[in-house]
Amino acid sequence: LLQYQGTMAEKPDPVKWSDIGGLQDAKNSLEESAVWIYKHADAYRRLGIRPSKGILLHGPPGTGKTLLAKAVATESSANFLPISVPDLIKAEVGESEKALANIFQTAIRCSPSVIFLDELEAIFSSRETSGDVGRKLISQFLVEMDHLDKVEQHVILLGATNHLDTIDSSILCPGRLDRLVYIGPPTIDERFSILQVLAKKTRLDSSVDLELVATKSEGYTGADLKAVIRKAGLLALKRPQKDALGHFIEQHDIDLALAHVSPSLV
Ligand code: ATP
Image (cartoon, rainbow, N blue to C red; front, side):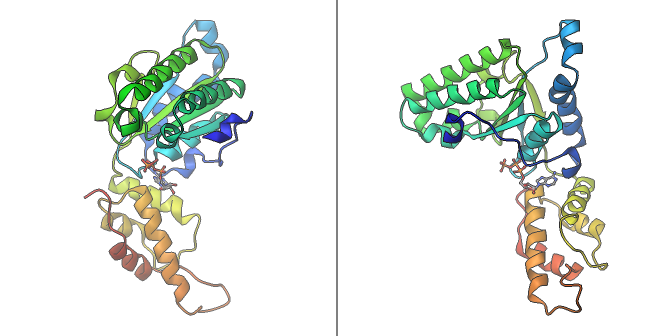
């Protein structure tokens, strides 16, 4: 949070659409609603269309919401300003509002930019935000969103939550976070795609059958699958090296790792 009291936002880790397995509908929707605004800004202006600047990603944890937000920034060559809402509201009384104002000002100054507000529900549901202090922060948040809707600079506001039901409807009305994108549990095909993405960053033995792993991993999110591959890698490292090529993950390592890492979504 306090990093934005400086003057610069940072370029994100370069997460591209191709670094995200599955989630094709979400990628298409974000490409249309968030990336085209940057790519075709003049066309929008000529047609007199005011594109929506606020999008809320919702769905269970570990399914790729943060990755998608980073990809929107990368694919638009925009600066990325990630904010953890629980950290924001932990600040001293009065400081949270200042920090929030600062984030929006920085985003406008560093445009094109993407503000990513993770765990957005915390602003409505925590002890800190019940009562006067919380109400002030929420109303400041609404003011900042309304201001953002009016400025010419390219700033996209992406929120993420695992608890859509607790989000106050004042935040979801037109001109605010008025577009909802659901990020659900990965299907079997999506798990296969996620495993293929994860496999690019590791060394798999020819015994590994990722389609089989996809069938065996019902209830595992992308984050769970990452944990499985990591665990399998650690198991492979414990084995004596066969030859000079070093360690490779075998199917057997993944099977053991699946037994070790529990699925989040069952
Ligand atoms: P949370 O709600 O807990 O913040 P999230 O939905 O934002 O979770 P991410 O932080 O994007 O989830 O995912 C965690 C990690 O899991 C990512 O860094 C990535 O390595 C892996 N992962 C999740 N989903 C995918 C995916 N669809 N493709 C590739 N990797 C994924």
